[in-house]
Image (cartoon, rainbow, N blue to C red; front, side, top):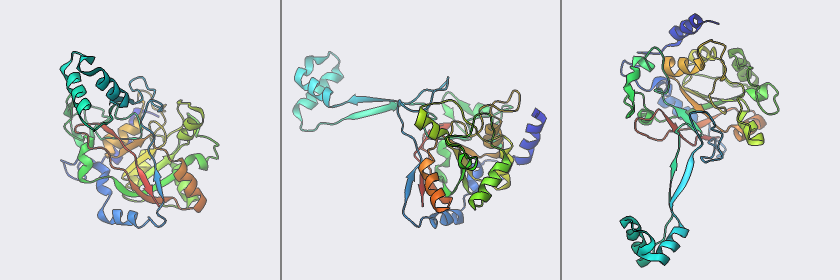
Length: 326
Protein backbone atom coordinates (compact mmCIF):
# COMPACT_ATOMS: atom_id res chain seq x y z
CA UNK A 1 0.00 0.00 0.00
CA UNK A 2 1.07 3.58 -0.60
CA UNK A 3 0.68 6.94 1.07
CA UNK A 4 -1.76 7.81 -1.72
CA UNK A 5 -4.12 5.09 -0.47
CA UNK A 6 -3.88 6.49 3.05
CA UNK A 7 -4.62 10.04 1.93
CA UNK A 8 -7.50 8.93 -0.28
CA UNK A 9 -9.12 7.24 2.71
CA UNK A 10 -8.44 10.30 4.88
CA UNK A 11 -10.38 12.40 2.38
CA UNK A 12 -13.30 9.95 2.42
CA UNK A 13 -13.70 9.72 6.19
CA UNK A 14 -12.75 13.24 7.30
CA UNK A 15 -15.32 14.87 9.58
CA UNK A 16 -13.88 18.39 9.64
CA UNK A 17 -16.71 20.92 9.76
CA UNK A 18 -19.39 18.25 10.12
CA UNK A 19 -20.40 19.62 13.54
CA UNK A 20 -19.22 23.17 12.96
CA UNK A 21 -15.89 24.89 12.52
CA UNK A 22 -15.38 25.24 16.29
CA UNK A 23 -16.17 21.62 17.16
CA UNK A 24 -13.80 19.86 19.58
CA UNK A 25 -15.85 16.74 20.34
CA UNK A 26 -15.64 14.89 17.04
CA UNK A 27 -17.64 11.68 16.85
CA UNK A 28 -18.79 12.01 20.46
CA UNK A 29 -21.42 14.28 18.89
CA UNK A 30 -23.01 11.06 17.65
CA UNK A 31 -23.96 10.10 21.22
CA UNK A 32 -27.43 11.62 21.37
CA UNK A 33 -29.90 11.71 24.25
CA UNK A 34 -31.77 8.85 22.57
CA UNK A 35 -28.53 6.86 22.43
CA UNK A 36 -27.92 7.36 26.14
CA UNK A 37 -31.46 6.20 26.89
CA UNK A 38 -30.96 3.15 24.67
CA UNK A 39 -27.76 2.30 26.55
CA UNK A 40 -29.42 2.69 29.95
CA UNK A 41 -32.19 0.28 28.88
CA UNK A 42 -29.55 -2.45 28.41
CA UNK A 43 -28.99 -2.65 32.17
CA UNK A 44 -31.30 -5.52 33.10
CA UNK A 45 -29.23 -7.69 35.45
CA UNK A 46 -27.42 -5.15 37.61
CA UNK A 47 -24.01 -6.62 36.77
CA UNK A 48 -21.01 -4.29 36.91
CA UNK A 49 -17.75 -4.89 35.02
CA UNK A 50 -14.79 -2.58 35.78
CA UNK A 51 -12.68 -2.44 32.63
CA UNK A 52 -9.69 -0.49 33.93
CA UNK A 53 -6.35 -1.99 34.92
CA UNK A 54 -4.57 -1.20 38.17
CA UNK A 55 -2.60 2.04 38.25
CA UNK A 56 0.81 1.17 39.69
CA UNK A 57 4.38 0.09 39.14
CA UNK A 58 3.40 -3.43 37.99
CA UNK A 59 1.52 -2.19 34.93
CA UNK A 60 2.31 -3.05 31.32
CA UNK A 61 3.75 0.28 30.18
CA UNK A 62 7.33 -0.22 29.03
CA UNK A 63 7.58 2.02 25.97
CA UNK A 64 10.74 4.05 25.50
CA UNK A 65 8.99 7.33 26.22
CA UNK A 66 6.63 6.17 29.00
CA UNK A 67 6.92 4.34 32.30
CA UNK A 68 4.49 2.74 34.69
CA UNK A 69 2.90 5.01 37.31
CA UNK A 70 4.84 5.69 40.49
CA UNK A 71 2.82 5.79 43.72
CA UNK A 72 4.42 7.55 46.70
CA UNK A 73 3.37 8.36 50.26
CA UNK A 74 3.73 11.89 51.60
CA UNK A 75 2.96 10.91 55.20
CA UNK A 76 2.09 7.64 56.87
CA UNK A 77 1.91 5.96 60.25
CA UNK A 78 5.64 5.42 60.41
CA UNK A 79 6.28 9.12 59.77
CA UNK A 80 3.80 10.08 62.48
CA UNK A 81 5.53 7.93 65.09
CA UNK A 82 8.99 9.19 64.13
CA UNK A 83 8.03 12.84 64.05
CA UNK A 84 6.27 12.73 67.38
CA UNK A 85 8.99 10.70 69.08
CA UNK A 86 11.89 12.80 67.86
CA UNK A 87 9.99 16.07 67.90
CA UNK A 88 11.12 19.42 66.47
CA UNK A 89 14.77 18.28 66.39
CA UNK A 90 13.83 15.71 63.72
CA UNK A 91 14.84 18.19 61.03
CA UNK A 92 15.77 21.79 60.71
CA UNK A 93 13.17 22.38 58.00
CA UNK A 94 10.36 24.57 59.39
CA UNK A 95 7.75 22.46 57.67
CA UNK A 96 8.90 19.27 59.38
CA UNK A 97 8.82 21.03 62.74
CA UNK A 98 5.33 22.33 62.01
CA UNK A 99 4.05 18.83 61.16
CA UNK A 100 5.74 17.30 64.20
CA UNK A 101 4.22 19.93 66.43
CA UNK A 102 0.75 19.28 65.03
CA UNK A 103 0.99 15.53 65.34
CA UNK A 104 2.32 15.79 68.86
CA UNK A 105 -0.62 17.79 70.11
CA UNK A 106 -3.64 16.42 68.27
CA UNK A 107 -5.64 13.20 68.30
CA UNK A 108 -5.82 13.12 64.49
CA UNK A 109 -3.52 10.87 62.51
CA UNK A 110 -3.70 10.48 58.72
CA UNK A 111 -2.04 9.02 55.66
CA UNK A 112 -1.58 10.90 52.39
CA UNK A 113 -0.09 10.09 49.03
CA UNK A 114 0.36 11.13 45.43
CA UNK A 115 1.04 9.56 42.07
CA UNK A 116 3.41 10.47 39.27
CA UNK A 117 2.40 9.04 35.93
CA UNK A 118 2.21 9.45 32.22
CA UNK A 119 -1.47 10.06 31.62
CA UNK A 120 -1.53 7.26 29.06
CA UNK A 121 0.28 4.61 31.09
CA UNK A 122 -2.83 2.74 32.27
CA UNK A 123 -6.36 2.26 30.91
CA UNK A 124 -6.88 5.56 29.12
CA UNK A 125 -8.44 7.73 26.45
CA UNK A 126 -6.43 9.52 23.79
CA UNK A 127 -7.65 13.07 23.33
CA UNK A 128 -8.11 14.34 19.78
CA UNK A 129 -5.02 16.51 20.33
CA UNK A 130 -2.82 13.44 20.81
CA UNK A 131 -1.67 13.00 17.19
CA UNK A 132 -1.50 15.05 14.01
CA UNK A 133 0.15 15.29 10.61
CA UNK A 134 0.75 18.04 8.06
CA UNK A 135 0.75 20.44 11.07
CA UNK A 136 -3.01 20.04 11.55
CA UNK A 137 -5.11 18.27 14.16
CA UNK A 138 -8.79 17.36 14.02
CA UNK A 139 -11.11 19.95 12.45
CA UNK A 140 -8.12 21.83 11.07
CA UNK A 141 -6.82 23.15 14.37
CA UNK A 142 -3.10 23.95 14.10
CA UNK A 143 -0.58 21.67 15.78
CA UNK A 144 0.77 24.80 17.49
CA UNK A 145 -2.38 24.81 19.65
CA UNK A 146 -0.51 22.30 21.83
CA UNK A 147 2.46 23.80 23.67
CA UNK A 148 4.43 23.11 26.84
CA UNK A 149 1.50 24.69 28.69
CA UNK A 150 -0.84 21.99 27.35
CA UNK A 151 -3.49 21.77 24.64
CA UNK A 152 -5.53 24.91 24.13
CA UNK A 153 -7.71 23.00 21.67
CA UNK A 154 -9.01 19.43 21.66
CA UNK A 155 -7.79 18.69 25.19
CA UNK A 156 -9.35 15.81 27.09
CA UNK A 157 -11.23 18.10 29.49
CA UNK A 158 -13.29 19.50 26.61
CA UNK A 159 -15.42 16.34 26.59
CA UNK A 160 -16.81 17.07 30.07
CA UNK A 161 -19.72 18.93 28.45
CA UNK A 162 -20.68 15.68 26.77
CA UNK A 163 -19.33 12.91 28.92
CA UNK A 164 -18.60 9.50 27.45
CA UNK A 165 -21.46 7.12 28.06
CA UNK A 166 -23.26 5.17 25.37
CA UNK A 167 -24.14 1.73 24.11
CA UNK A 168 -21.01 -0.39 24.14
CA UNK A 169 -20.50 -3.30 21.74
CA UNK A 170 -17.77 -5.85 22.36
CA UNK A 171 -16.21 -7.59 19.37
CA UNK A 172 -14.13 -10.51 20.60
CA UNK A 173 -11.59 -11.09 17.86
CA UNK A 174 -9.43 -13.43 19.92
CA UNK A 175 -12.44 -15.72 20.43
CA UNK A 176 -13.47 -15.39 16.79
CA UNK A 177 -10.00 -16.50 15.69
CA UNK A 178 -10.02 -19.37 18.19
CA UNK A 179 -6.92 -18.05 19.97
CA UNK A 180 -6.17 -19.48 23.39
CA UNK A 181 -4.46 -16.30 24.52
CA UNK A 182 -4.20 -13.52 21.96
CA UNK A 183 -4.28 -12.55 18.30
CA UNK A 184 -0.78 -12.98 16.99
CA UNK A 185 1.38 -9.93 16.33
CA UNK A 186 1.56 -8.98 12.67
CA UNK A 187 -1.75 -10.66 11.77
CA UNK A 188 -3.73 -7.46 11.35
CA UNK A 189 -7.44 -7.38 12.14
CA UNK A 190 -9.13 -6.42 8.87
CA UNK A 191 -12.56 -4.81 8.29
CA UNK A 192 -14.14 -8.04 7.06
CA UNK A 193 -13.16 -9.71 10.33
CA UNK A 194 -15.02 -7.04 12.28
CA UNK A 195 -18.08 -7.65 10.11
CA UNK A 196 -17.81 -11.40 10.53
CA UNK A 197 -17.30 -11.18 14.30
CA UNK A 198 -20.37 -8.96 14.70
CA UNK A 199 -22.45 -11.33 12.58
CA UNK A 200 -21.25 -14.40 14.48
CA UNK A 201 -22.07 -12.73 17.78
CA UNK A 202 -25.47 -11.61 16.50
CA UNK A 203 -24.87 -7.95 17.25
CA UNK A 204 -25.07 -4.84 15.07
CA UNK A 205 -22.84 -1.80 15.36
CA UNK A 206 -24.61 1.50 14.75
CA UNK A 207 -24.38 5.28 15.11
CA UNK A 208 -23.16 6.51 18.47
CA UNK A 209 -21.95 3.11 19.64
CA UNK A 210 -18.60 2.65 21.35
CA UNK A 211 -16.85 -0.43 19.98
CA UNK A 212 -14.59 -2.46 22.26
CA UNK A 213 -12.15 -4.82 20.54
CA UNK A 214 -10.70 -7.75 22.45
CA UNK A 215 -7.42 -9.02 20.97
CA UNK A 216 -6.44 -11.11 24.00
CA UNK A 217 -3.39 -8.92 24.73
CA UNK A 218 -4.49 -8.34 28.33
CA UNK A 219 -5.02 -12.08 28.77
CA UNK A 220 -1.46 -12.67 27.59
CA UNK A 221 -0.06 -9.96 29.86
CA UNK A 222 -1.94 -11.20 32.91
CA UNK A 223 -0.86 -14.80 32.26
CA UNK A 224 2.77 -14.30 31.23
CA UNK A 225 3.69 -10.67 32.04
CA UNK A 226 4.75 -10.48 28.41
CA UNK A 227 4.43 -6.91 27.10
CA UNK A 228 5.36 -7.68 23.50
CA UNK A 229 2.77 -6.58 20.91
CA UNK A 230 -0.18 -8.56 19.68
CA UNK A 231 -2.37 -7.90 16.68
CA UNK A 232 -4.52 -4.83 16.37
CA UNK A 233 -6.79 -3.12 13.88
CA UNK A 234 -5.47 -2.47 10.41
CA UNK A 235 -5.78 1.13 9.26
CA UNK A 236 -8.45 0.12 6.74
CA UNK A 237 -10.78 -0.42 9.71
CA UNK A 238 -11.05 3.36 10.02
CA UNK A 239 -13.46 3.37 7.09
CA UNK A 240 -15.47 0.54 8.68
CA UNK A 241 -15.92 2.67 11.80
CA UNK A 242 -16.82 5.74 9.72
CA UNK A 243 -19.46 3.87 7.71
CA UNK A 244 -21.21 2.90 10.95
CA UNK A 245 -20.76 6.31 12.61
CA UNK A 246 -19.07 4.78 15.65
CA UNK A 247 -18.53 7.29 18.48
CA UNK A 248 -15.28 5.84 19.87
CA UNK A 249 -13.21 2.65 19.87
CA UNK A 250 -11.22 1.00 22.64
CA UNK A 251 -9.15 -2.17 22.85
CA UNK A 252 -7.33 -4.33 25.35
CA UNK A 253 -3.95 -3.75 23.71
CA UNK A 254 -1.53 -0.86 23.83
CA UNK A 255 -2.43 1.01 20.65
CA UNK A 256 -5.78 -0.28 19.31
CA UNK A 257 -4.13 -0.74 15.93
CA UNK A 258 -1.33 -3.11 15.05
CA UNK A 259 1.98 -1.43 16.05
CA UNK A 260 3.61 -2.53 12.80
CA UNK A 261 1.81 -1.00 9.86
CA UNK A 262 1.85 -2.00 6.22
CA UNK A 263 2.36 1.63 5.21
CA UNK A 264 5.99 2.66 4.86
CA UNK A 265 6.83 5.77 6.83
CA UNK A 266 3.52 5.73 8.72
CA UNK A 267 3.85 3.86 12.00
CA UNK A 268 0.32 4.41 13.36
CA UNK A 269 -1.92 5.28 10.40
CA UNK A 270 -5.11 4.27 12.25
CA UNK A 271 -4.35 6.87 14.93
CA UNK A 272 -3.98 9.54 12.29
CA UNK A 273 -7.11 8.58 10.37
CA UNK A 274 -9.33 8.25 13.43
CA UNK A 275 -8.15 10.94 15.83
CA UNK A 276 -6.95 13.52 13.33
CA UNK A 277 -9.29 13.06 10.38
CA UNK A 278 -12.42 11.51 11.84
CA UNK A 279 -12.29 12.99 15.34
CA UNK A 280 -12.78 9.54 16.88
CA UNK A 281 -11.12 8.92 20.26
CA UNK A 282 -9.10 5.81 21.17
CA UNK A 283 -9.13 3.88 24.43
CA UNK A 284 -6.19 1.63 25.20
CA UNK A 285 -5.18 -0.97 27.82
CA UNK A 286 -8.78 -1.85 28.73
CA UNK A 287 -9.39 -5.13 30.56
CA UNK A 288 -12.17 -6.89 28.62
CA UNK A 289 -11.72 -10.49 29.72
CA UNK A 290 -14.43 -10.87 32.38
CA UNK A 291 -16.92 -8.95 30.27
CA UNK A 292 -16.12 -11.12 27.24
CA UNK A 293 -16.63 -14.34 29.20
CA UNK A 294 -20.03 -13.18 30.41
CA UNK A 295 -21.09 -11.98 26.96
CA UNK A 296 -20.04 -15.30 25.43
CA UNK A 297 -21.94 -17.23 28.09
CA UNK A 298 -25.29 -15.55 27.49
CA UNK A 299 -24.85 -14.40 23.89
CA UNK A 300 -25.48 -10.73 24.60
CA UNK A 301 -22.66 -8.49 23.41
CA UNK A 302 -24.01 -4.98 24.08
CA UNK A 303 -24.25 -3.07 27.35
CA UNK A 304 -24.20 0.40 28.84
CA UNK A 305 -20.68 1.80 28.91
CA UNK A 306 -19.77 4.63 31.28
CA UNK A 307 -16.26 5.90 30.59
CA UNK A 308 -15.63 9.56 31.46
CA UNK A 309 -12.01 10.74 31.46
CA UNK A 310 -10.56 12.82 34.27
CA UNK A 311 -10.99 16.55 33.72
CA UNK A 312 -7.29 17.32 33.39
CA UNK A 313 -6.91 20.81 32.00
CA UNK A 314 -5.02 20.91 28.71
CA UNK A 315 -4.18 17.19 28.71
CA UNK A 316 -3.85 15.10 25.55
CA UNK A 317 -5.01 11.94 27.32
CA UNK A 318 -6.46 10.69 30.57
CA UNK A 319 -6.50 7.56 32.70
CA UNK A 320 -9.88 6.15 33.66
CA UNK A 321 -11.68 3.12 35.05
CA UNK A 322 -14.48 2.48 32.52
CA UNK A 323 -17.53 0.54 33.67
CA UNK A 324 -19.74 -1.79 31.65
CA UNK A 325 -23.26 -2.31 33.04
CA UNK A 326 -25.52 -5.18 32.03
